[in-house]
Image (cartoon, rainbow, N blue to C red; front, side, top):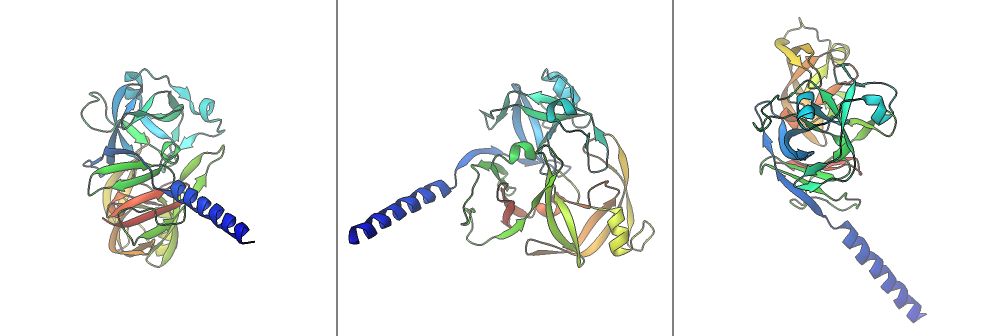
Length: 311
């Protein structure tokens, strides 16, 4: 009996050791990250051997790339359905359709090839030639990012990728205390992830927001603004801000602004939050970089959680 106890103890110790080894945070890549005048976070990647600056966009189902750069890289335009098998057409937050994509066979991040064939939706937005001016030619979306864990460290200007972390202990190597924001995927069929959705509270009203690092402004849909807060373009405090161009197409949409008292998410309360108001199709709200940039974030895609600390 004593020997059996020892054997079981040794087996348990071995399993614990294996679990500890498996749970160790493993960094796979680190690259420089910069913020441009639009508030977008940019990194440099390789597309078919061509250098490309792209936006880190957790609001994008697939990556996006300008048609001009696609031609520059020798990529062929294809109808969306031929690659994804998705019966419908992709839409941006404003309900605009995207009908074509390109397949990238050689995608490099931090100098290393990412195995597989990666689809990027082809748009007419973003920078045109020259391609080496540091301006974005597209975005990298969650179809690629969700195969890793990702850290966004704005203060240090670094974007880091880690092996996906499945364990329950704190994944943050820089802090002993942290905040958590759970999210769920918006499903759009055919195993595609349509965005990271999280519950937020805006002036006491619960809203489901898309966590969008590709959004240079936080925007609330006009329909909700009217239903929950009684706001119209003529309401006191509502101001016209011009037009907002969709990141995904050439359409322009009237944009207004309004200052809300509080925005709460993940245990954080932000005060006096200026938010855009626009017609956004299927999206209730985009939680963008004006708020997210205040935090250092570790996005555990498989665990559906963002761990963050004040930067």
